[in-house]
Length: 64
Image (cartoon, rainbow, N blue to C red; front, side):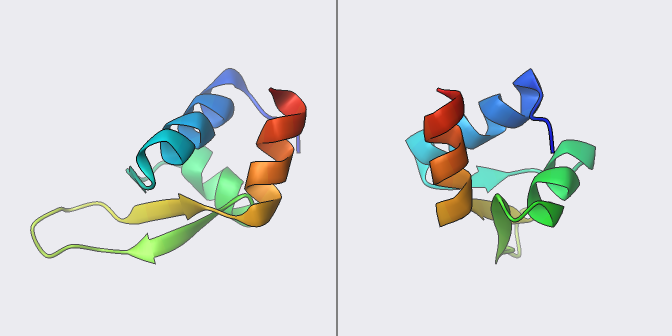
């Protein structure tokens, strides 16, 4: 998978904040590649929360 600027920004945000809230095509692609995973939902938030995987952290370190 070739990471786009949007993919990298999502991953950086997740590392900085611990979680990422939001669905979409980019998130689906990151999850399918094993770079992000669903962490669940909160009853008061319509979108799921996601966390970065170890594979995602390693990939992000390489992409800088």
